[in-house]
Amino acid sequence: MGVGSSDDSPSQHSPVTSSSYIPADRDIDFLQRDELRPIRLGLELLKPELIQTEQGIRSTIVVFGSARLLEPARAQQALEAAKAELQAAPQDPARQQHVEVAKRRLALAHYYDIAREFGRLVSSTCQIDGQCDYVIVTGGGPGIMEAANRGAADAGAKSMGLNITLPHEQQPNPYITPDLCFQFRYFALRKMHFLLRARALVVFPGGFGTLDELFETLTLLQTGKTRNITIVLMGQAYWERLINWSMLVDEGLIGPGDLSLFHFAETAQQAWDLISRTHGGPAAG
Image 1 (cartoon, one colour):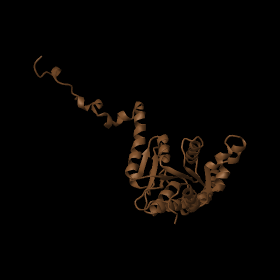
Image 2 (cartoon, rainbow, N blue to C red):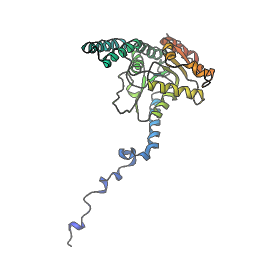
Image 3 (cartoon, rainbow, N blue to C red):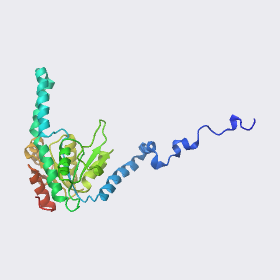
Image 4 (cartoon, one colour):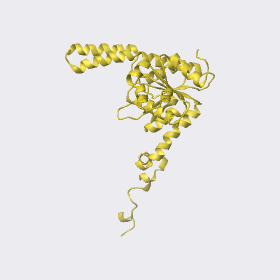
């Protein structure tokens, strides 16, 4: 066959167009393979750690609580809207329940203000002269998380948010310090970062996620896997209604001393006083 025949021409597809030619650290599809999970876990541990070190974050206080609790004014608006919907169909059980839930959320809405005050109090007390101690950390979402980040922003201080990728869209609240806003793929690594620098865990009323994070931390303290973290439960009546702590002792499922792993507080000042007495720090002003 003659020179230049199509049979002698190079492949129509150059090797450099193949995905195999992409350097491994730049090949996003490759990095998503199941076999690369250990690498992703390592990266997810390392990236937030390096950034926090660069930002000078020395210690943190973690604030957990429901994403569904609104500030009082918005909770009142939600109740009025639910009542208006009920008026259109007074016998509708779903609308009746909606009103009852809105009433309960309004009753809990004062915790938004307490979380905001706590974030402001701690941040204005501890982030002085460029130091980054007791930096507020939340899950980065709305509700109680937003309130705590907002309180830090009120004081002109840094705060952190640890978002998680979920099947439904999640956006970070606008009060997180942008350079300290992280998004995680793995719950396990997110939980680890909550506690790596934590001196305290302040827990407001919440649902499954809040309870999961609380009981994991209690378990780590009980088993000695972590130490020197003060747990403060906000609202003793709420927590004692939700969890029968004494029954666990009476049934022999936990020891009496395990009840000393946590404390109750009703106000932002009380929570901060409990933490500062244990760990030291500037006197609250």
